[in-house]
Length: 217
Ligand code: B16
Ligand code: MG
Image (cartoon, rainbow, N blue to C red; front, side, top):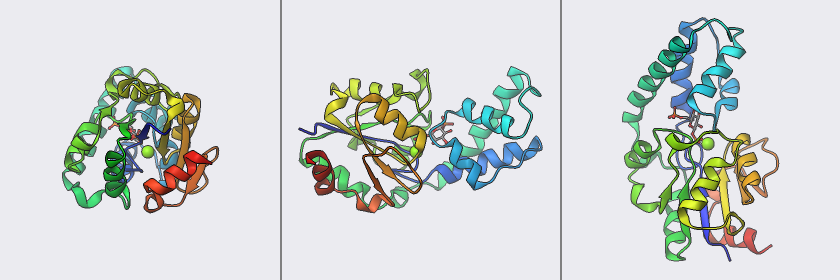
């Protein structure tokens, strides 16, 4: 029996990837590194400091900054990102998600969040979704970004559910790898993702019937 569904946040519940991109593009631009939306795909599901590391490597500036400077860059990126979150409201919830959360609740299927964003609680609050989740894994306590399964395993443990009884939903390749490594079934949202048990182009295809069909097959 399906007992839990664990959601990624950015790209599944709402599209904050664009806000992350705007903030990183500003910081990268200031240090002479050009990033585009295509490169941004590689930052999805990757923690703040790991993202900055990838940007520095991308720009050939891997060894140009001290630890202190790196922490300052990451902190300033976050200030830009958090300011952009002011624009966020329930209107930004992606298609199908609100109804799916209600259906899961009706079926008494547990609902978890596996976001490596330290701003996840604030994002959920801005979307008025906090009370819909039974457990949100705390990104501050995670040692390893996706594709490591740690955040998904933490979410399952917090719900008291074995991963073999849960479905994970992700829009990032690193996230799909994390779900599979945790032993859950994986739903991928988007194009060009591999290893998902079910791949859909948009969250609008998510509903209880579809999840049950995937589970039963
Ligand atoms: P923060 P997810 C991830 O969220 C984002 O996809 C990724 O781009 C971001 O760098 C990471 O959160 C950390 O976010 O700087 O707010 O702690 O996809 O795991 O929901
Ligand atoms: Mg995501």
